[in-house]
Amino acid sequence: MRAVAFTVDVDRDVNLACKGEICSISNGGKYPRFDSSARGLELMAGLMEEIGIRGTFFWEGRTAEVLLDRMDLKDIMRHQEVALHGYDHEDFTGKETGLPLDLGSTKTVLDKGTAALDRAFGKGERGFRAPYQRVTDILLEELHAREFLYDSSDTVELVDGKVRPYRNKNGLPEIPVCWSRDGRGKRIVSYLWPYHEGKRRITDYLDLVDGFQEGLLVIATHSWHPVESYCSGIRTIEDVNKEMNDLRTLLEHVESSGCELVSIAEHLRREDAL
Ligand SMILES: [Zn+2]
Image 1 (cartoon, rainbow, N blue to C red):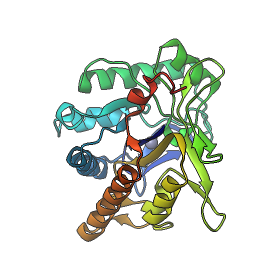
Image 2 (tube, rainbow, N blue to C red):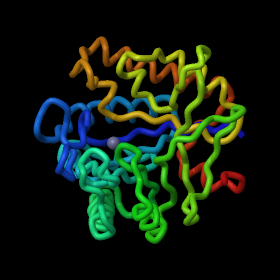
Image 3 (cartoon, helix red, strand yellow):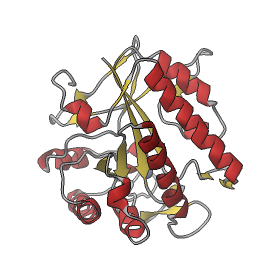
Image 4 (cartoon, rainbow, N blue to C red):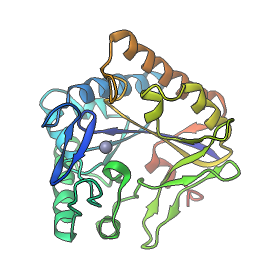
């Protein structure tokens, strides 16, 4: 089986962790912004609707609360999988904030994030991806205790063209992003940040898809990234259109190369997924 999950983290624009603060800010200011995320969300969900594919959207709780006042989120997500991505884009490990989250704080984040998504989308079983893909044992244990469907924060190597979900030590399914080597031997991750920042071409990711032979390949990006760049700020309309055309090229390549585009939850329901 060659399945591909296209995943989108829907979080505050160009998020950054700050020393001594649990709550992330947006690049270039002191507070979080959500405009680029909102615009990119509409574009991406629209593209996927048009092509007819189901993706997985990892929602930060606060972003869902803010965007709920501006957009019909339930309608935008009606064919998509909704999963959780923290509440205020917390760095659970404290790597950059200096504030690792203990059990009490971890529970609070999951409570608030889940409540925000319940309000926006209705109750449901969900998966999880940690902000900055940084997890702690406390977090993974708590996700398992709360019967989250899976975590998708790890990055593993694509070995002999294969990558697949596995169970972590407490039994929670882990759905990793992967990395491989490009034709020049340089590491490439199935997370599109370098593409959006002009460090890689979309064709590099078409090659990555071609090198994938078996399992579940998880491709990851952010809703704000086709609209705003970390290095160069808000994009021009021409630049946004180019980004969206490239994403279309990638998704169409995935389909035409014989891979099935699936949501993560859908893939996990299959007998041979794990
Ligand atoms: Zn994020």
